[in-house]
Length: 238
Image (cartoon, helix red, strand yellow):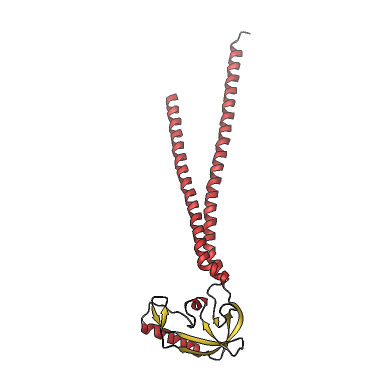
């Protein structure tokens, strides 16, 4: 019976050690995953900062202007299209804030950087016929608004003779771009924190279990001594 008890205790101890090793491996993997998520979030912060946050901060376009469409024209000379091909250039001139001087209108601030006179840059992978048709459709849509007033964005420096129809880099787009790296950073930190909390609770539980086991051992020893003393007193002559 004692041998069976020892075998049972040995089996239970081996099973506990195996479970503890598996738990330790799982916790290490979770911590590694958490730190990997945080590292990727830092990389995403860098990419989003260079591609979205920096252009938004450096943008000087203000929505305090009104534009009146003056005229549209397609230039005979085709211009470079993002270094991929060439395209027909649609120029749009407007009167800014009631001024008699015309300025070039662009679709967004990126169009200003790519071309100083063209309204926008289409998909450069299209054929020449498709590019011409697309630019022609845009011109037809704008011609219907000739003489109408609409809000636009202007910049004091360095693009005094330019205006944009809409801003590409806005506050909402910037915040949306920062949302995903923030979520990944918080998720990675939360994962590491939860694993560390679980490990601390496990150590605390082990200490409490050890204290309970020692108390039980002392109680069993005291009970054995009490029974021994009772037996001795019962066997002693009266």
